[in-house]
Length: 158
Image (tube, rainbow, N blue to C red):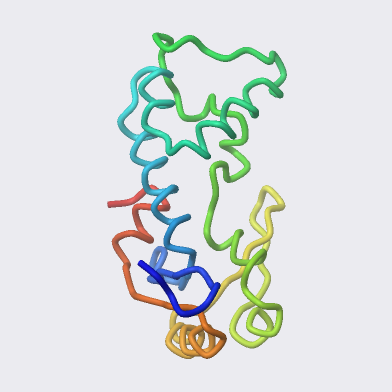
């Protein structure tokens, strides 16, 4: 689908009951596919096969750089907590990634910077501010559409 700007198409929705999230649609689709692979894989081969190509390549790099540098064989049993970086939000978490692409003036206007117990920073946007936040993104040329199901799948739900 072509867009009149170079801005990525965004999807948005609630994450949980108290957090409004917007994210690039392509990234949401990658994360949804990765979370599905995480939930359904019983072996490392199944997990790797279920990841979108960019995340599969990143996983291989992360495994090579892990403490033992070992890449589990395809037939080895899979546990999501054995994925390098799993405790540090890998392969990604939209509220954290919003700090990277949401313009600073919109971060200040609509959100607050929060930090979880692991020290990971993220942008907290109150659901009450969601509609105005989306309108401000649209005014900057971001095509936006609501897709609460995709947002939820990107975070391991649905």
